[in-house]
Length: 92
Image (tube, rainbow, N blue to C red; front, side):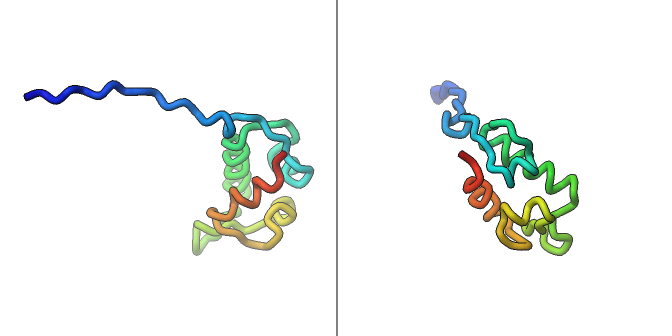
């Protein structure tokens, strides 16, 4: 017996993620001052981290803060899992 095939449905992005948010002055120093969606904020933060080689060499899950990231993080080093929570506090 043949099994019925399931129709593929395309998943729509969550509107909350796509809503442009304005970064704080501290975050704007890293990603720019224009309003962008959360997904784009995360992408720009990671681009900045990789460009400036801020991932910890011994543990890639840790991110070392430079002068621009320290006001956002509030400390010298954070894990990649803390990153989103800390960045969200700087979005309106």
